[in-house]
Amino acid sequence: MNAVVGSQGNKDRKMQSAEQLVLDLSNPDLRENALLELSKNKEFFQDLAPFVWTSFGTIAALIQEIVSIYPVLSPPNLTPAQSNRVCNALALLQCVASHPDTRMLFLNAHIPLYLYPFLNTTSKSRPFEYLRLTSLGVIGALVKVDDTEVISFLLSTEIIPLCLRTMEMGSELSKTVATFIVQKILLDDVGLDYICTTAERFFAVGRVLGNMVAALAEQPSSRLLKHIIRCYLRLSDNPRACDALRSCLPDMLRDATFSSCLREDPTTRRWLQQLLHNVQGPRVALQAGGGFDHMLVN
Image 1 (tube, rainbow, N blue to C red):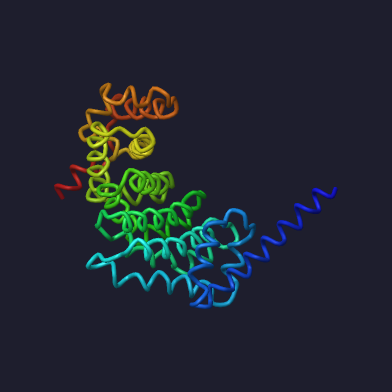
Image 2: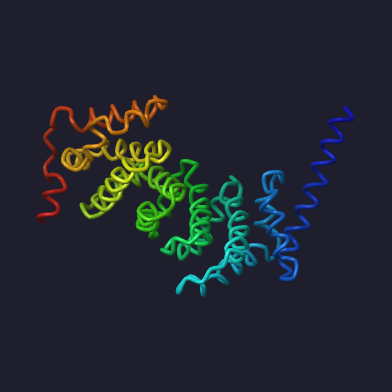
């Protein structure tokens, strides 16, 4: 009994400490330390997200941290200290994006749009890479929960081109998170329809996925490959996309290039088998309207 009471008392003290740190965010002199402490310990503080959202001036302070970095994005002059500080602010926003009570409030306030300039950067230096990865983490937290409203919001913005850019030029970890976001968008019917509505969108996604497969043959990553194969498998659920994949699915996915990479991953092996069955199975005549080739000609 005493242990339970002690544990509860410890939790209460931690939450009081967290609440004080959140209030410190509104004071520019105390903000840097508060950001560091909160981002370091955010998983220990229960219900931190609702308090961050509802406490006076906190979200404004976090947005101020984000906007203050814009001038050093181009030309790229972001220092490691600046990157760490803004990433601590982004970690708190990820907390808000993950929490069921604050997710839609966060979305309806269009706060993800403040992160898009970070995803638009191309410098490969460590501070920029860390900034992109942490920003993708916030978007990844939004799409983790299957919610069509979240997907519809993201599709109304430029999230697909920004993810495709990271999938082409980011580190392995950034590529993995960006591909996961595209995968989650595709797994929603609204997202699949969006990508497959025009030939240009489909081939933009297909080209980047194809380039990534070629790069993985040189530097294998089973985690990244898993998300790529899942994206292809989901695309094959659309009849026109499936027809196009017959000619543009990389040969490396059809032969034994990645067999050793997938040896320990029965789920991804099954997805790949299903993909190949869908793409190489009996050619089904498409409905009137034709495939993507028809759309590109017209």
